[in-house]
Length: 450
Ligand code: ADP
Ligand code: ASP
Ligand code: MG
Image 1 (spheres, protein in one colour):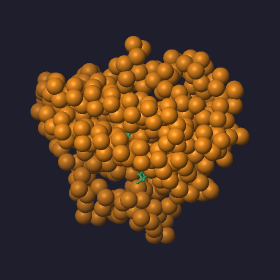
Image 2 (spheres, helix red, strand yellow):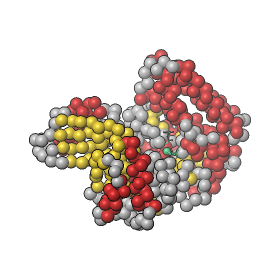
Image 3 (cartoon, rainbow, N blue to C red):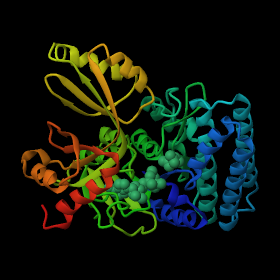
Image 4 (cartoon, protein in one colour):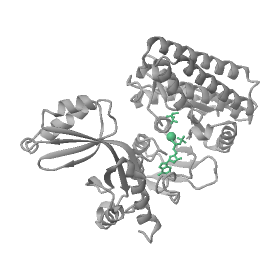
């Protein structure tokens, strides 16, 4: 049994959905469970609906509802499944639900994470039945499964924490019998529900995470992530057109790349696969015959495998000439981040200061207030992170020297080489991230490198 997850562009319109259906049919001998994202662009539009409605712009919100209704029915029509009465009725009902939600938000004048989850989950609730119909049309015995039955999560709306044990039980009850009967279950990624049945989401890009959670729960042979690029590349091809395909990469390297901005994988995707030792593949749904990328424990070690980067990084610096050296101070500082449920990416310390970077600024004000008990706190916005990732990066300083030389005159705010030596992270100005990635890529992959 395998999990095959198809991202937004792989189900972007009728043509893409038909291509995806063909890929699933070709995988029938592997007993696929299919996870799909919303149609490309839909989730962004759903968030706009939520925000516009809450801001009192109901007409604008409803016009986006109608635009999405039109694009979804256009896909249904072009796929030749418009005669499927249940599909057409259910799709219509979901758009009515969406319009009601928009009206309710405009009355409330406020979009809470919980109500935004109700709105944004509709993209995957719409796409999965359309993919089922497209599969049925080409003779694949597909069945729709409501992901909310399986994906039990915490009630942290907008970034709900999945409950793997409960998910595994639900999969045995609801999914396994279907697979045993030779059916192809199709479910929406990204969405889940609390134990009380309230809809949640796993955060943006979360369908990859849904796929790996299901893969772990079902002890799948493989988790396949089908997307719009040939696999994991040595850099984001939108920044570095010369980026090369990585055919085989280690779990730890892929996890670092994902958490430092390689959007092709949601940052949490790798962990469930690692726990069960399930290989993860990344394939291009536009070129299904490509080799793709294989992610396992045992890829050969390289000093630099790939480069990732992200913007929107904030550096928080605490300075105190007296306290930082005292035992327990570091723990107390990190507890502030923990209490405010904010994860820290990169850390650098000196005798008198500690600098950390965070992505999530939701609780920044409270964090700064609580940290001021330890010394002077400063916040630097507008930073970005560039990470050089390779399993044997730390074994020699040659790569570090080459990286610093390649960056040339770009201003560096922080540098961190982890003890296990798998990544070198560089904090630069957010605006300099693409240029830093290009320079590093040129130095490590385009000149006579390695
Ligand atoms: P999907 O909708 O299939 O989930 P995403 O847009 O989330 O697709 O992720 C695919 C995109 O990730 C690619 O189009 C590419 O621009 C971007 N990306 C960033 N870094 C990398 C990388 N190292 N390798 C491949 N793609 C990357
Ligand atoms: N549709 C969701 C998003 O756009 C989840 C995903 O595509 O992975 O964030
Ligand atoms: Mg994605």
